[in-house]
Image (cartoon, rainbow, N blue to C red; front, side):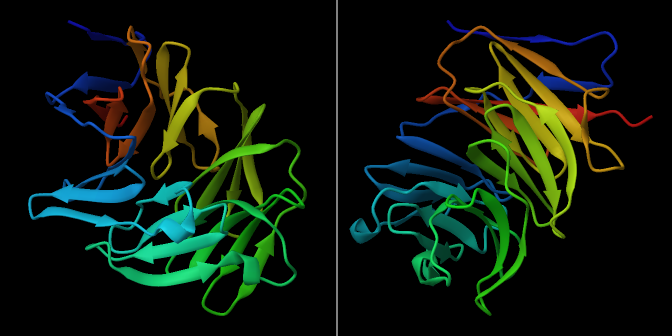
Length: 261
């Protein structure tokens, strides 16, 4: 039997504990779980939602491979298909609400990443100019565009107020005004996730948890370290204080409880 062990620093003011049995999930991708307990995953090129009410799925072969999924709002789920430069917004039944063709934005440019940034806005990474943009898709208007980013971007992690740009050497944090609020070093190849001011990073066989401070920068003074003996971690998903660790066919669940001073 495989085990995951917890190692808590004596100076830690955050505790993590395995509180649920976890569950088996046979899938090609695990995207996350919403506040209502619905599970989202990918299998055979379909985006699938499994809940107590049954299974729904969305699939459109013409869109190509599904590149990114944003579940921050389960009533407005974002699917991004990079090859066709298309964003699809779904409702909670996985019915299509809106389709946004990023290739029609003028001037033309290629977008590498897309995330939700509010009711009618998207965080976009312009690969041609290597910039982060905040885009109003209702009025077809770019609201902000940052200075040129230093490194090649591998991932965007975001909520409605902040976007964390993951690159080769750093994670840079930008607010909704386009200002950079902080930078932390980062090791290429690590797995990570973010949920409302809390960041989890897989660093070799340890998972670190960082929290944003009052100046909207990540700090390690409040930290949990989870030591993982298994080598087959495929993804992390952080939601409402719960950390889901996907091992391809199984998901383990931890609760991360901050202790307030």
